[in-house]
Image (cartoon, rainbow, N blue to C red):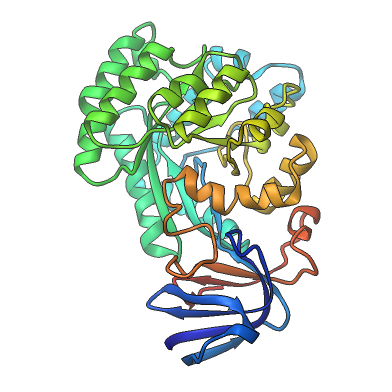
Length: 400
């Protein structure tokens, strides 16, 4: 077998059927994994380059499958307000929250948005992230939503990362539509989504189904528009209350339902039938000092795959470390280290509809992987503030 590169003398946590492979070898050809397995069982491979992993552990490249990486300004003052006792809902109803970021985002140009997002992305890439989802949703009108998604696409052109874009125009009600939520949904469905989809800027559609955002009926209209455009959907669901969001997402075959702190068992069962991933976002849970845990035991019992992401955003999860989210998922939500690692690899890929090509170390999949200076993979969930990432490979090329 001819290969572009051969990686050996390491241990592979494949996150696939092979599980853990001690003293593994990985052959790469054309940006994809050509062979992976025990070095003792390796076929005759003639590689143009050879790389000694020096006993390190190797995992698939990490996937941050829920971020709001592109935005203007920040909301540190709201962080102070919450510490003084104001709730997230109170801040939002007083004109803060998402709407305050909308003002800053609309005032920023596309170049400034991309530059700010780039600084945050660089932190993720240094931790072995090779795929990132980026949502819009702080423009809330066509030109600003377009600028956000164009900035996100530019990140994928500038950096060695796969960027998946999600249109979240149904994130909040813009000030100019106060009291006219249905009219704004008309704009989203009739103008914003069709225009941005026609420009190739949208990989999926999201919405915020919550009492401070949009009703299930309004969300369903957005999903119907996405369906007409041939776009998959996902949903911010049941974060602050049980609004039937998980069941609604499942009804539309959503890739993921996200947050889910208030999801009841019938919503969990609906997710099983639809194959919808449960996206857990411990950063927002932590920063908002929530006490209602997502129903992790129900997800386990019913076999719902659980993903973990930063939810990087300026208001409720200003997180730029996916490794820290691994620790939070374990300590706050009681995931096991292997569940958490599956949440940023195999299940994260499924939450983006990319499980056929990403998320595990298997022949035929993208040669995205990271090498770690750890004695056991559980250490990736254990250390606080440390980054043991020694090497990052994207499409078979060393990028960090």
